Image 1 (cartoon, rainbow, N blue to C red):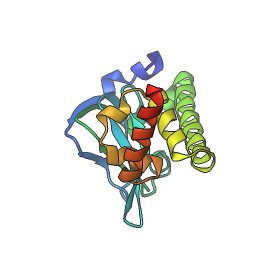
Image 2: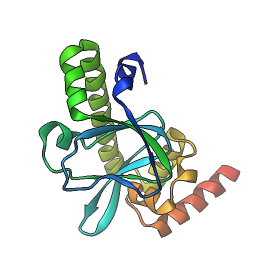
Image 3: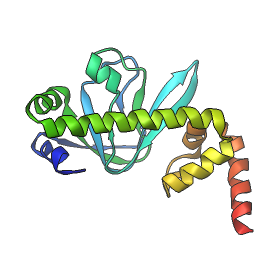
Amino acid sequence: MDDVWQSLRPHWTRVELDRRRRLLEAGAISRQLYVVESGCLRLWYNADGRDVTVQFFTDGMAVSSFESLLKEVPSLFTIEAVVATIVRVVDKDTLLNHWRMSPDFQRALVDLLFGRLADYQKLFLDRIANSAQQRYVELCERAPGLVDRVPQHFIASYLGITPVSLSRIRKRVKADNKR
């Protein structure tokens, strides 16, 4: 996190979360931004009773239900700790005050939002163009260690497959790596 974000430091609240603790429920209005200090959060939604993980957030990453936060509409997503996690929390009013007062902060927030947009575009294209195995290998390369510390059913949910399919993919990838 760069100096611009550090300017919020006096306004952060540090919160320790147990595994499975929810920071935001789908249907609630988001009023805070969270930055992961250590651990892992996931952003997910319920698709007709099926848990779909949209993204994981690890050390140094910021997360909120941005549409809900900025437009004050009910969140489509739930934000939940995957493992014991420590986050820094800042409220919407503080964010907006910094936005109004600091062009540097405006750029930093816009960069964060554009980064998230790019992540979601890539996720969308990956689901269309790549196999589940390709998505798994890319996840392992992009976020080393994540698949070892996150429960496998969440990884499967993120990849859009069942835990059984993930188990088969992991075996194939492991066998391919031994060759």
